[in-house]
Amino acid sequence: MTGTWLNVATVLIGGTLGLLFGARLPERARQTVFHGLGVFTLLLGVRMFAASEQVILVLLGLLFGGLLGEGLHIEDGLRGLGAWFERRFHAPGPAARGSSRFVQGFLTASLLFCVGPMTILGSIQDGLTGDYTTLAIKAVMDGFAALAFASTMGVGVLFAAVVVLVYQGGLSLLAGQLQGVFSAAMLAELNGAGGVLLVALALSSLLELKRIRVGNLLPALVVAPALVWLLEAAQRLWPGLRGLLPG
Image 1 (cartoon, rainbow, N blue to C red):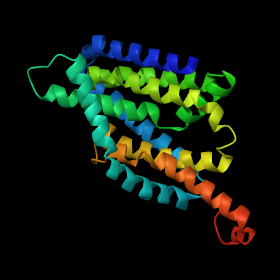
Image 2 (cartoon, rainbow, N blue to C red; image 1 turned 90 degrees about the vertical axis):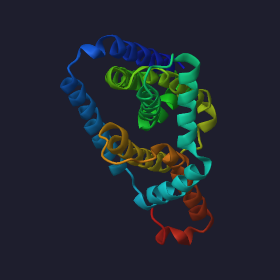
Image 3 (cartoon, rainbow, N blue to C red; image 1 turned 45 degrees about the vertical axis):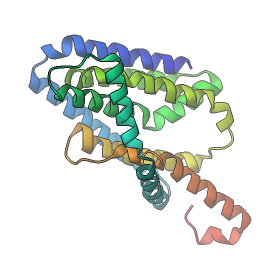
């Protein structure tokens, strides 16, 4: 879990620097950095989606995953977790706007730091081989992002480090169980679904163009590779399907 601890540290350091010195940045400079991160996230998501080999499975993963996420109220749960952190650790401010900023910062940072191929691949590499190079690169990116987010969204960004620790650390600890389960095709469609979520996150929270409940789309990261597994299993049982189904 070396890479995860490094990632947690960069989020805390970057977020703290953003809280301490972010206010000294002109509003226009903060907006420019924030929008730059949004555009970068958007393009990164497009690049991830372009690597998909079976886009119909990504679409089905998003549809079924979205329905599952709505049923489970995942985004409401994330917002509730952010609100609990605020009540537990953050002194109430004079205006209600501070509360919404705390939750927005926690939710946006948590999603951005935990959605993407670097999180999955890096955690698996760290858990299986001890190679945390991928997570180290991600940690640098997350640290700079935390600085920019904290300067505009406040202290809620720092608490996203808890989600990073639990999510990435859990993946690393379970990496041994995942070995031999995820095929290259499954990983490709997981990345494709993750790319769509990053695009949605950029449009919704970073560029603020359209309100999207991105948290409720998170099950697509499980559904899309699960569909690939079912397809591969069906093709092994009935070889005649290979000419009818994609892949």
